[in-house]
Amino acid sequence: MATRTAEERRRAEREAYDAYLASCPARQVLDRISDKWVSLVLNALGDGPLRYSGLSRRIAGVSQKMLTQTLRNLERDGLVSRTLTPSVPVRVDYALTPLGESLLPIMHAAKTWAETHIQEIHAAQSTYDQNPPRP
Amino acid sequence: MATRTAEERRRAEREAYDAYLASCPARQVLDRISDKWVSLVLNALGDGPLRYSGLSRRIAGVSQKMLTQTLRNLERDGLVSRTLTPSVPVRVDYALTPLGESLLPIMHAAKTWAETHIQEIHAAQSTYDQNPPRP
DNA sequence: CGGGATCCATAAAGATACTG
DNA sequence: CAGTATCTTTATGGATCCCG
Image (cartoon, rainbow over all chains, first blue to last red):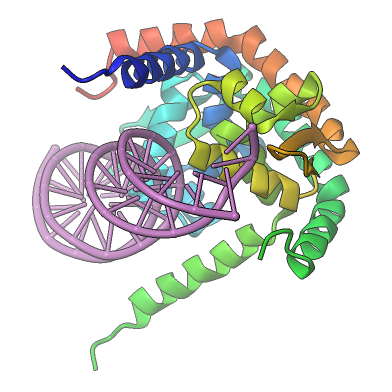
C-alpha cells in the first residue's frame, strides 16, 4: 500500500476543522447574515411587515426561488415570522421577530463601518492595481 | 419578433439592481467579511503577524489556493500588509493594517451577537423542524 | 397570490502537481 | 518557504412550468 499517511492526516485535519467551524456560533451566524438576499430581506422588513409580492417588488432583482428559499431559512432560524391569512387569494405577511430585530443593530454597525471606510478601501485598491506587486 | 417587453424589462430591472448593489458600500464590505476564509484570516492576524506557513497551520483546513487568494484580496483592500524578506528561503510576513484592525470590533460584535443568540436560533430551528409548516 | 419542482449554466472551492 | 498553474468537483442561482 502507498504511504497515505500524509494525505490521510491532511484529510482528517480538514474534517476536524470543518466540524469545528460548523459548530462555531459566530460562523453559523456570519454565514447567514452574509448571504446576499438575507441582508436585503432583513433590511426590507426592518421598515415594517411586507407581503411576499411586496418583498419581491422591494428587492426587485430577486427570483422567487431565492426569495422563497431565503424566507424559509429566516423563518426556520426564527428571525422572520410568516403569517398566513386564508382569504380568497391567500395572503402571506412576513415580519421580523424580536430576534430578527435584535440583529438589525449589528447589521447597522457593519453598514456604518462600510460607509466610513469604503474610501480607504477603494484608495488601497487603486494603489494596488496601479502598482501590481507581482505582474 | 416576439413580445420580449416583459422579459426584457425584468432583465433590465435585475441589471439595474445588480449595479445598485455593486455600488453599495455596505454590500461590498459585507461580501468581503462574510467570506469564510477572510474572517478566519483576520481573526488569526488579530493576535499578531504571521508568516504564510503560520497562517496555513493556524487555519488548518485551508488550501494554499484559497489562502493565497484570500490574502491577495485582503492586501488589495488594504486590510492586510505583506512584508517580504528576501533571505535565503524567502520569508513573508502578513499583518493587519490599521484599517484591518478597525474592522476587528465589528467582527467581534457579530461574534458576540452570535454567541448570545445562537441558542434561540437553534431552538427556533428545532421547533421548525419538528413541526414542518408545509410537509 | 404565493409558492413548489425541475432543469440548467456558471461560478466558486478543492485536489493535485510543479516552481523560483 | 511561499507560492503558481491546471483540472475537477460542487454549490449557487436563475429560468421555466405548474399548482392550490
